[in-house]
Amino acid sequence: MSVQALKTNTQVDVIQQAKVHLAAANRLAVLDDLHEGIDNHFTVSVPGQIDRYLILPFGRHWSEARASDMIVFNEKGETFEGQGVVELSAQCIHAPLHRLTGANVVLHTHQNWAMALNMLADNRLLPASQTAAFFHGMIAYDDTYTGVANFVNEGERLAAAIGDKKVLFMKNHGVVVVGDTVAQAYKRLYKLERVCRAQVLAMSTGKPIQVLSEDVIAAVQKPSADDRHSRDVRDQLFFEAMMRVLDRDLPGYAD
Image (cartoon, rainbow, N blue to C red; front, side):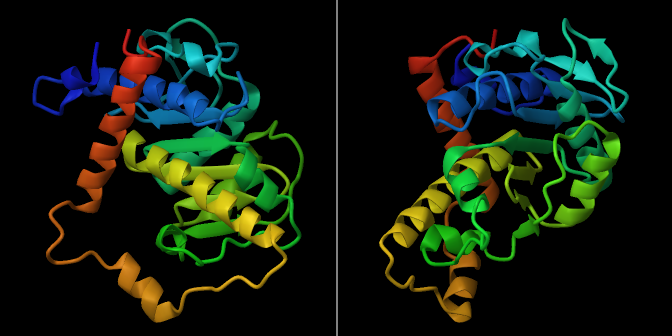
């Protein structure tokens, strides 16, 4: 199935679309070097259901992800649909984050450049570029790494830490990005890695970083009345374009 067949219309099965988009995001994370093979986790709340979440079963390489592979699990770690089981830390991090934040999509990675920044004593993302300015006020910081997440109360702690923000920087660990749609969340994750890389590279010069003023940040974040593309439309167009890349370079995610 190509991306052209995934245009939103009243005939689309929303659960199937969620599976397809989730599989696409897993594969895109491989192309964009945001993955760790079979580790880390992307989840989506099953549309119209409570305490039911979609995930790629543990053991599948993200480059192999297909819509038909996705399993449905709950906060207890029980599998309700599909073959395989949810990995323990995925269960303990993601289910409470969905439940307590209301996020439809939760993406957790140990991606390289965000990790590099989160290994520093001062891991704050600076609004020093146009793209970074979009993240200003959107990031929460968890400065206390407590070890591998083997209990649901760790996910509850992370949910309290992220609050109403859209990104959580996890010191010595990685990042969490939440969103309303896979398209929105994945675009945030993709852009986040790029601004983290830019900041780490800028810091490596040893020269002062020029941070944008609050007025400029506000101007960047405010949508123009003349803009022909809303933020939601931009997210959708971005993800559809990325899926076309998959159709060309790594097809099969929609199977």
